[in-house]
Length: 441
Image (tube, rainbow, N blue to C red):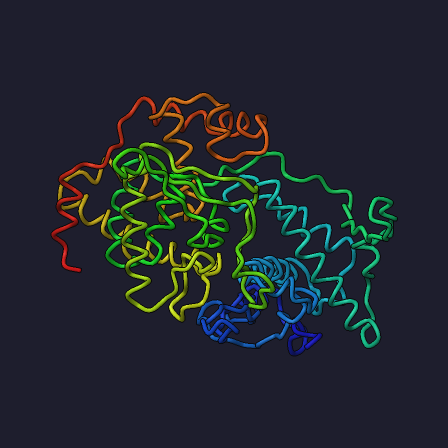
């Protein structure tokens, strides 16, 4: 549907501003047997929230290459960026179809999109990413419709492809450059909320053991060993090794991350299987060896009791159909646990115990912005900095960072939060956890 913005006659700007483009997420059955979200760009009447037109523009979000169709979250982000652009055309211009856009129109949108409604600038990397999403959309829209529509821009004006020779591998490589359109990115950087207060982890794990026991061990490995989400789902049973000393006492736990998981070899699913960012052998921090060992034993016993393989090449984490859990599934289940179980219980128990004022700032921050599953790795780093008192070099090794510079940059960017963790005790009140235990499951 190439003329989706076109409306009957020439409606006044007030009527156009009464409409809005939104991404309406739809669920489809994926190859893994799980429901996956896919975008659908729809024009709505804003006041009534009634759909006016199913545009079909989602087909132009990316080229039909499998590598780009894997991640439903990326597609949703692309749809959001495109909807933002379409609404700009609808509300700020008299353009009635995408092919009527000029380079100046596109530049005007990108210039306006550097700032949020609250006046603050977008994160620089976020702005670049959404600019690229829009460029991909406009280039593909042009390529698919150039023979039938009178465009006022061309794909070559938005993106340039240069073929260079890779002498080392004796092959040619295509380098793609997005047009700058003579625009500077925002200067400020928004610091994403990744804070999980020290004691909150106890409550989150408590809820995970009750309602999401299949990912409780994954959460612990993120918080107690600093594993990234993609690394968690790449663990096989043979990759987890317990170190024992005299009398069989467990003195350590190591996770082998020196190679991608064998069960993801030749992966053909539509969702991202996750990956290992830096190949290494990762140790659980000494203070948490006992907790991880107990969770590992419980998890292994649960898997075996349900008939799932616990052989060395079998995945430690599987979805509800018994297939290897992908990073998207793991992240989605963590988010669901966070908002459906942890946050309501945190709020209610704080209210019951009269401690809500002490936690209100964090609860409000969580409701405004989800910290993401990466919050566990952040928690791990904060623990090493504030509780264990390690040097930046030591923390770099525990985190599996590639360079000292990245660790120093991390410390610099989080200086205020590090000071807060050091100066204030946020150990979760024992009575709140006890009160939570009395809640009806």
